[in-house]
Image 1: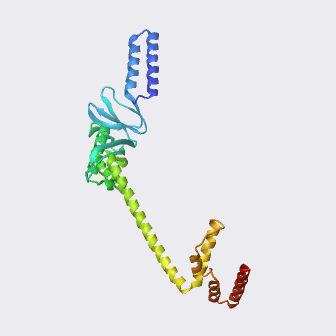
Image 2: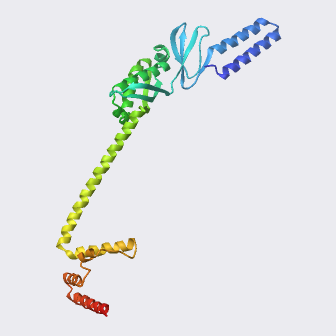
Length: 304
């Protein structure tokens, strides 16, 4: 890492020139000197990418940060032990068989988004900052799980993510690392507990359904009670309602409807007296006479 193709090309060209000069001048010393110069050039010039920073140590002591682009070092005196990546890095981590606050074993998978903000501290203050942040994230996750109830963990993931990110950031700040965000991907609970929670949810839904049904029946009974009071004070409305029910049944099912005679009598449609009372109650005396006459004619025809 750090050796650019351009430096390799320069090294090859310089070495070739040294060989050609040595052959042309018949001098091995000149060829060796030019080749040595090419090797020094290859060792001295490095290239750092846009997102990289090179940590330079001179005789074992921190000197500077280099990059991005071309830079040079003193061969055999300066070294580049670390190339620090400044991009946002994703680190998955998990906590297996960890007990929650209410003593429920869970397996939690999460992912951390972080980046290096101080390459010097990341290279000097910790041996391997990638491994260190992975272990710090896992221990922080176990701490958060241990002080959180299962129900809160399943419902309030956003709050847990925020608290976990703050804990990790406090632990990695000394290493020059910034924790950007944490996202819990999955929370696994024992299968027996899943079945129990499913049964509990089903029972709760059934209870709510029964309560809603009972409340609906109570509302319907109140409406029927109010309708009964209205029909008691107005028998004509009751008779018209009964006729409307018969008409709707004939439209929906068939053209033949069997109705008990008692029901017809209650509607005032089963006898001549019922028809007469219906006409009297409607206030149409002329209509009552017509209905009575028609009924007598029908009765005579039936007798003959």
